[in-house]
Image 1: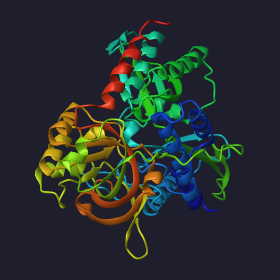
Image 2: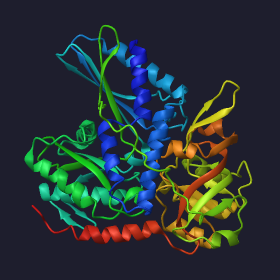
Image 3: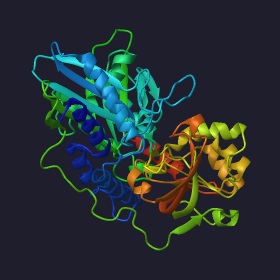
Image 4: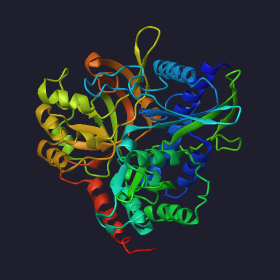
Length: 507
């Protein structure tokens, strides 16, 4: 195996296969929720999706994230040549549909199409005195990246009061970090934390904590105790998987420390989702072959799913566009919905476009899916979906109610819920919000029976284009109805009350 193929396999396996320690966490998580609950349903579907991705070598989540490489080489090794090869293999994996094209020019909005551009991929080089090359890769998606947070203490925190410059203040910051994420970062989540540093080094060191294995023990006793405390007590907030409520909100927490300036005390948090994709390889510097894998063990759990994912009961409501207002008004929060027929994808760029232009297709009575799929063309030139789970819907909050009213949209599919403006719009115009399971790219791709066209591809790029997809058996839960009810609002309020009960100092 050449160096090129070794790097390519690292990228493919990281995108399509969870590491051993994360597999163990997920297997344990599925045992903690009440059978038949929304949380259990979500976890079972996630487990099935992980198995499907591994078996098909397709992305676990449609957002394959920002490729972040941590490379350590022997002294004198040609790092420039290695960087060039990494970039070539990132482009190769993107073309093969193992990565979604995620590199966007921040000034023009133009997608490079190959995940290459200023700042992408991220590559950090280090040296050691060992005669081997070590390459680690983290694929962290935008949904969880958006829930990263940095605190400058002392500060006031909702529900917890003042956070001071001590471990007690750090404790409060970390509980708040979990609370503010809710289900938008694809909980159950995972925290990488840095105490100290400056604003830049703090975030970087926090993300580096995600390269620690889940079962390691912090060598600093106070931090080991705090890591355990945060996991135990964050799971008392009741946010649950996907933010639907439940016992499991946080899978793990790893904390590092850097020295700081006297005037600054930062607590930086890198929030990771359940689709915790990180692997590594040790490469022979002479041959380029993989000597061994990192984060992969012989006794890892090969199969996570114990059922068939989203279990149906026959009581589900079937929606197929065009949908009448009467049908929508009959839905209520908690209803399980099966979507058949045509839906149209739409994310940030499309929503902004629709505010100022007519739609390329008639959206009256139709369904918008907050999704940026992974797409490839087959040999005949036809588009094929290789991953298609929902994206975080909160980004569309400034637009959604206006778009629903302008075009007569009846249903929106996404994840993580939406806010008061959208809730009011659903009630006023007769529409609902359907929450699909975040990250379940293969489970939902299997529901897509045909790609019936695409609009605005050249203008917006693959993730942001308006894809017209024909579905069959696409399952989701109504979490915001047309009567002013919102499960997300309920969970936020109940978790806020639970957070308040943790305000009493423990240090």
